[in-house]
Length: 202
Image (cartoon, rainbow, N blue to C red):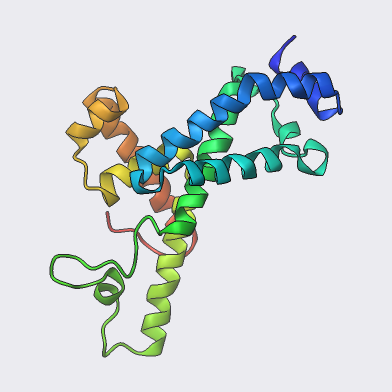
């Protein structure tokens, strides 16, 4: 039985198929959650948080007559395990964003300045301040539109300041591949930002 047939049986209400899904994939989902937490914010990689996220993902997959699970189509040879990893990582990243912004506007640097403070001038007009806030919102939306792996890349390279050479070891690819990925991500962000009427100087 293929992965797609397996999912279709689960989604049709086949209890035996769903029990098989639970036995085969629930521990895997749990490990994906824990791994994503440890990679992105070790301080939040607690058993309680992992359990909470796991419960939410199970609910998401099964609610509304397995609506989310039915979106698995096995396209381009994607396995069910890979699809579940993507769903799990995306939800875990959303959870982390709710706990803390990937790039906090209120976080102070070594000089005691916040990003919000750097972007806004005390003498700026309300219109200027609104424009800055609009740009920030636009950039956040563009970042949100990236896939999970690209978000990982930004998290480590931009937020954590990991060098491209170090990123090579983290992603286990060549330096050329890392440079190409960075260029592709920046290009996507620039195009997205431009579509919102802004320019990205990076």
